[in-house]
Length: 434
Image (cartoon, rainbow, N blue to C red; front, side):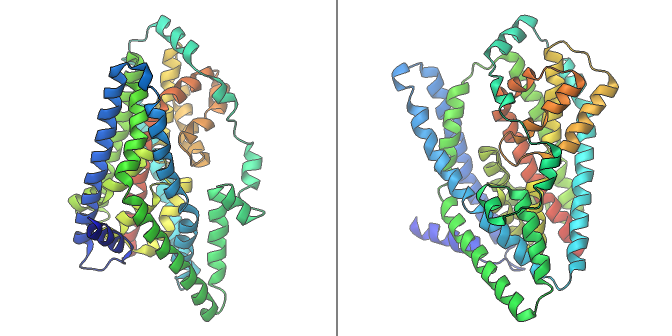
């Protein structure tokens, strides 16, 4: 067992070669199998516990939960140095800034296009599906009474002007400490491009330093990922134990609808990777699975970033492409967020008996699609951007509290879809450069 663990760590940090992708895909499939076992055991154990109705043992989920938090924290502690190292080695390793500008421009164009398509898909498909729900007004009132709306008021975003000014950090170190990823990445990108203007010898020394940091982070991540089945079990068990099988039918139906929409749209990414990225569909599916599972379990694209980068390596995607595209994607690109949040807004309107015109439905989809680029990169962060939309259209802001209450499951699907889209964009751009 120890030999297998050491072999996994060594392969996780070894640079991919032309004849190695299939071997790496098989290794990732083995890892995803172990992770799926942890996920399944957590779900089965949590639901079984919820059915026992033994009050004396009610502390068990709260005892197990910190183990999952520790595992997620272990991944998160590698994110800032890994993001900086990936971007610096990807950009400063180029010969000219022209290549960087071209790749960055293509990435942003793809992000915007995919967000527009995502928003339009939800605009056309979600309203008729949500209209099929049989919503009992009495049940709606009961739900509202059980909803904690204080979370909405305490999670206000800063004004747009303040957010815009904060994009250029006064102190990059403070930005790293405060987990202000987007300002930190802007500084890192500018720093990396400035490196291209200094002497080759000095630039090589700095790139070599950050290459060593990147490789070290992947060794550390390899150790952490060996504990993934335990960590994911500890994350899923308390959730399943809390929800049990007694979900309210209306909320359960909405969760099924929006999750199905996200799954369908995520599956549409696979032909893009196969056709445009020219990656065998089977290899793409198997390599992407571990990153999807980590994203699904942690609800954080940042936490899934190491697994996403490993997936791009297994698929033979250039590290110069993935090292630049993935950090930008996790900070700006929230592929499935417009689907989940727009459908949620339609659901709230239906729940409160508010009829929306076609124009209002379109405005909601467009506004949430645009604001997704402003969404904090944290679990359920997309919900924090919706209050201005609700106020401007006269929708009850209390409805966001209901969405927060059920967002655990929806956000899992959203994050898994976001992770899938990030790797797909890297695959498409990698092929366009070859």
